[in-house]
Length: 559
Image (cartoon, rainbow, N blue to C red; front, top):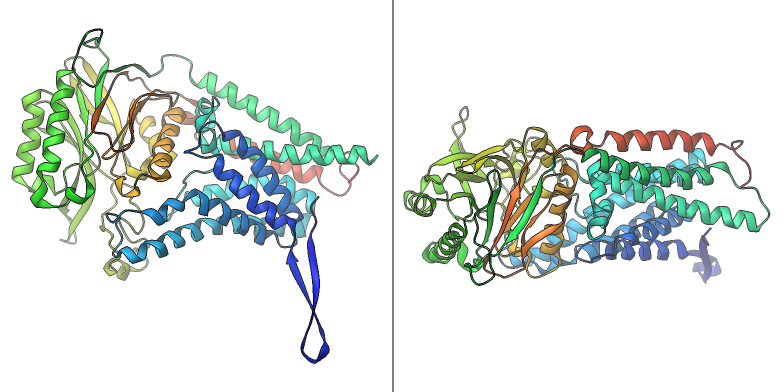
């Protein structure tokens, strides 16, 4: 399908000719596909469909490349450099020991992600050598999904803007309710394969050659998968579903603005975006730069009838429970205004066995009576930024100082119960980049959470694509689980979205305001919550078996 390799001759020592090989067009096409895959992702809106031609070009390039691993590497570099370029622009507040290490850290992260695409190309090449070119091409959707699953696993898991996330800015986002982000990725990969197969089938017909059966099956299989997602999303949402009732004006009531209280059972929640400067946030002498905006905005939310004020990750920049002055302040803000507050803060406790101090990146719920009701410790800490990975194998890594906080992992999120005069609700917390892991939110919703609350302090990403990508990925968790989501970011982007991932109220970067909405939480009953990714695994396994059978030398007919 693609030209393989160009070659040339140069004079060598002793008059001997040196034959060298130049990269063929397959590598250029792989890089082009990587660029196209980036344009399909946030922060671009409405371009998600580009993921299909991007994967089609990439699959064809890998199938034709003399060195498929190299094609995967070119795709990965082009894709990840353009997707994660903002890592080179991190602010001075980034959890990195020295400013000069930021380029090296950013480059290492990009190279790490690109390695997975190299591995995809290598695995495709191995299949091609054993089973043939057609079998390798037909199995690429399964290999692709396996590669993306590997990217999200382990202590270095980083499932940032994988192929399923491309559908965030499109009407197809609600289909995530059927099989999650991975289901959208599988459908995209199978459709890309169908495009390649149908193009090759058309060429075979023009050449007067019969078409092999697997190429026809690929087209039919892609249609069946999309129809299955559509049906699954519909069935999974049968019965009462959680929904955002309406956005509420953040400022005071005025002419034409409704100040009515919500109905019983409806939760009015305010995401308090205080936009505290990160240059001031961690300076004890400038604690008022935190206290004043949070107190003022929370009071305004209470006047608007909010039951719950959500503050950002590490909104209180100290070990709150061990600081009597700050603890008293938080309690009085809640008690004086009669509003519950869910806020992020560092926490420390003694390990029961070893007698050492454990430090957590946590969040607590303070009731309207000012008392601490529940606490959550972040369960998936950021590798290198919040904790050095692999300390279970190499304990000495914990002593290396690259600017990381050395937080301790907590338990997976469980529902936190909130009560007010209007009702009782259960929500699950997600701190910072925990919102990119579908298993955390699914597990919490299965345990009874009817609302997801994501708090973050990603201001050190700057005014770049980083915070925009981070914010958009949280919407996937709402669409997958069929529950609303509230996101509160210190410097933006904060929003409230409904159970289909549609944003109904938001605040942009560098705004100081409240985002208020009325929410009617109800249990998430989507197929993804019930079955997880098993339908994806079953579909890919079925297709893999069919593909191997149909691509045998004597299966079907023609080339």
